[in-house]
Amino acid sequence: MGLLMIRRRPVTTHVHGPAARIGWFLLYLEALMVPLVLTVLSLRPQELGIGIGIGVGEALALSLGLVAFSALVVTVILPARVSPLIAAFGIETILRIHRSIAKAAVLLVVMHLIAVLIEDPRGLRIFDLAHTTWAARAATVSTLALVLMVVLAVTRAHRQPRYEGWRMVHNLLAWIVLGTAWLHVWWLRHLMTKPLLAIWFLGTGLLVLALGVRRWLWLPLRARRRSYLLEEVRREPGDGVTLTIRADRHAGVPFAAGQFAWLKFGSTAFVFEEHPFSISSSADRPRVKQFTIKALGDFTELLSGLRPGRRVFLDGPYGGFTIEGRDGSSGFMMIAAGVGITPLLSMLRTLADRRDRRRHWLIVAARTVEELMLRAEIEEVRKRLNLKVIEVISKPGPDWIGEAGRISGELLARYLPRNPARLNYFLCGPAPMVHTVSHALAAHGIPLRRIHTERFGTT
Image (cartoon, rainbow, N blue to C red):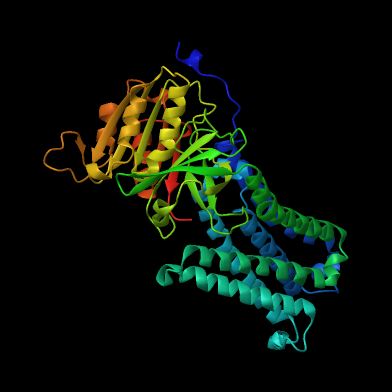
């Protein structure tokens, strides 16, 4: 009966899940390997060191350089806010992959540079910018910018710069690295005489340019057309603040329960400072959106000082951490720590608005009772759902009579239903908690395809 009460709605998360992740992995592997294959197909046998022509060392240097360029392109594309990509992996995982491929790109660039220095008869004179080629000049600028990026990234935790300033410099250096690397290959004219390499190289450049235009021009223009006005700023227990925004002369941006968006505050959608936050309101009411944010950094601490009437620009929604498309589940068990409750509250509110009659569980953890967030909102939605709420306090006071400690396999065993594999599980919070609880659920026989996670951290 409850399943019939759920209204069918379009899923805005695109493709997500294991199959999508494997597909994206194969696509990126292909992007890294294509230039290597094209090099082999484009060069004549004598150019591969068989007979006369360029030597094996020079061919190796060429291959390393092209693969390094592909790695740089992948590094730039990863955080370009491609919705299906974010739905497949989640923003935190994408940023981790971004950092890993960036490290691989640096290693490939170093190997390419060493191979060039060994093969080029000019040796270190190649760095004499006054008397070298334009291709060498572009390569030098790209390498220096890349080194600076690495140094700033490695020392960021020690220096603790303001996030937006660091992000602006990081983005600027990234485009300098990629742009001058592209010019370096372009000015190596002998590469452009190979049709396959030329087509791949020009196509890659156009793809990156299109993504750049989309990211820095089209997305802000779209956000400006669909702007919101700040309606209410409310302080929350647990050092949080809830922002309520209302669509300004439009029906609201549709989203799936559990998704997030980047928020900008100011007179223009082109302001650089923006931050991602999960939507905590119901997906069935897109005109009004709520975001509950915990004061963790220099930006979030300023949110409580915002005044109603402020214009808000929203880039999103993004993410595949959602209940949409899971109507076949017999129910949901949601597990949160701290501000990780926000996307789960959106899911619960959406289920309540749809009059869902299935059995659901919510396990929410905090250090103290005072740090439990949105208790009143959870209680309100509990009255509208068949929902059991379990609060877990790691440092309980003498009057606490609920669950104490941390979310463990033993605690889960006390609340899992008789057929736990028929549920879907949504975990959101700090990475250590998500990791521990995921393994505990798997140990209880829950299939991995039914465990959905979202890790909260700094971007």
